Each structure stands twice: as C-alpha cells, then as structure tokens.
Amino acid sequence: MFKPLNPKLKDWTNQRVWLIGASSGIGAALAQAMLAAGARVALSARNQPKLAELASGNPQALVLPLDATDDAAWGSANAILQADWGGIDLIVFCAADYRPQRSWELDADHVRHTLDVNLASVYFGLETVLPGLIAAGRGGIAIVASVEGYMGLPNATVYGPTKAALINLAELLYGDLHPKGLGVYLINPGFVKTRLSARSRFRMPALLSPEDATEAILNGFARGQFEIDFPRRFTRMLRLIRLLPYRWRFFLFERVLGW
Ligand SMILES: NC(=O)c1ccc[n+]([C@@H]2O[C@H](COP(=O)([O-])OP(=O)(O)OC[C@H]3O[C@@H](n4cnc5c(N)ncnc54)[C@H](OP(=O)(O)O)[C@@H]3O)[C@@H](O)[C@H]2O)c1
Figure 1: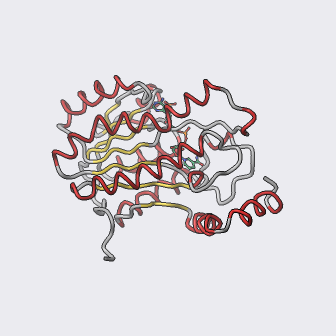
Figure 2: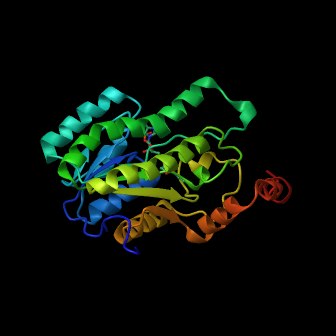
C-alpha cells in the first residue's frame, strides 16, 4: 500500500535516457546532471549547435537533433538510437513552447504550434517508444507538465490546457503501463528561471534555478514518486487553492491576486 508508485531511479550508470528538449533550461540542466551521474543521454531538440556544445567531450552523450512536432522524424531518430544503444531505459518529454496570452489575444498559428510542441509531440514520442519498452517489460516515461496544468490560470490560455492534458495523460498512462512493468513519472515544476519563463508577464513566486529543478527531479526519481512537484511549499499551496469552491477560488484570483 505504501510502496513507491514507480521503480526508484537512483543509479544512473549507463542508463539510456532520451531527453526531448535538451538544448536549454531544465532539459539542459537535467541532461548535464544525468551525464555527470554516468547515464548515456541522447540529447534531442531543434538547436543542433547547442546540443553539440552540451555533448562536447562526453562520449556518453549522443546528439540527436529532432523537431518533436514532426511525427515522421521520430522514427528516424529512434532508428539511430536502436542501432547505437539497442533501446532506451527512460524517455523524458521536456520540450515546450509558451507565450503569455489572455483569451482575447489568440492567433491560430500560435495555438496550433503550442498544441503540437507541448502535446502532440508527446503522443508521437509515445507511439515511437512504447512498443520497445512494453516488449522489454521495463523502463520509464517521464512527462514534464507544470503547476499551470493544476487549474486555469491567467495568461496560460494555450499553454495551461496543454499542461492539464499532460497531467491527465500521465495518470492514464500509469494505469496502462504500470501493470506492464513500466514507470510513469509526472514532473510538475513551479516557476523556474529559463528562456521560457522569461516571457512571463507577472512576478513569479518561489522561482528556482534549472539546477534546483534538476535536483528536485532527480530526488523524485530516486524516491520512485509518480508526481514530482516542486518547490513543495508552492505546489502545496496551489493544491489547496484547487480544493476551494470555484466561488472562493475566483474571488481569490480576482480580488486578492488581481488577476
Ligand atoms: N520554466 C518554468 O517556469 C517551467 C515551469 C513549469 C514547467 N516547465 C516545463 O519545463 C519544460 C522545459 O522548459 P524550460 O523552462 O526549460 O524552457 P526552455 O529553456 O525554453 O526549453 C524548452 C526546450 O524545448 C525544446 N523545444 C521547443 N520546441 C521544440 C520542438 N519543436 N522540438 C524539439 N524540442 C523543442 C527547446 O529546444 P529547441 O528550441 O532547440 O528546439 C528547449 O530545449 C517545459 O515542458 C516547460 O513547459 C517550465
């Protein structure tokens, strides 16, 4: 009953990790920490020079450029991994795009792009890696969502619903894949100082560095948590707000926080 929900990922030596969104921010910091801990890390994102810089001099790093919104490109990238490594032990979906927008600022191109990067790409990746992981009967899927998926928050008009969908997806994946021996890890960061959050229009409370975020993620993997959320003082408060009746929650947002 009180066993960890997932396998504890503690020893990274020669673990084969495919990290999507590895060129900057949380993904880049996580890649560096995993490499330092002895993992083999396939670094995927669009910015090949950045990936090459990260991999430089580390034989455990594999530069694997990928536009995650291109469903056909997933097959070719996976073929390289299969040829080089024979499979993977963990995939981390960390790619995302964010533009602060109120509901009256929408444009169709941006909506489509954000849904593709943040959500559709995860389905393309799952379609690519699940047959191999299920056949192996071991390994893990980690999905980076966000506390912005906990409830409707202003300015996250497209980003927020993609993150809510990822939380929902991770929950149902757990039901599907845990009985097949796979781990499913849902990572919900609070605010982290990165290129993405630099676009924010409001002051971000409890802001962490990508290195702090990485430490929290690795701790969560080591404990075998399903949800890896941080910083806890902030995520607990948001969870409490989520429990409020809508009348109170909207009052808090509008009158107290001025949203
Ligand atoms: N920063 C925060 O406060 C915060 C809070 C909660 C959750 N998160 C989540 O944490 C994750 C990492 O975000 P971050 O803050 O570290 O942002 P970031 O520095 O902007 O990193 C985003 C990563 O996604 C990659 N990416 C974007 N579009 C892509 C595409 N089409 N194909 C492949 N890769 C793509 C980027 O690489 P290229 O541009 O090279 O493709 C980059 O490596 C995201 O899922 C984000 O939603 C962040």
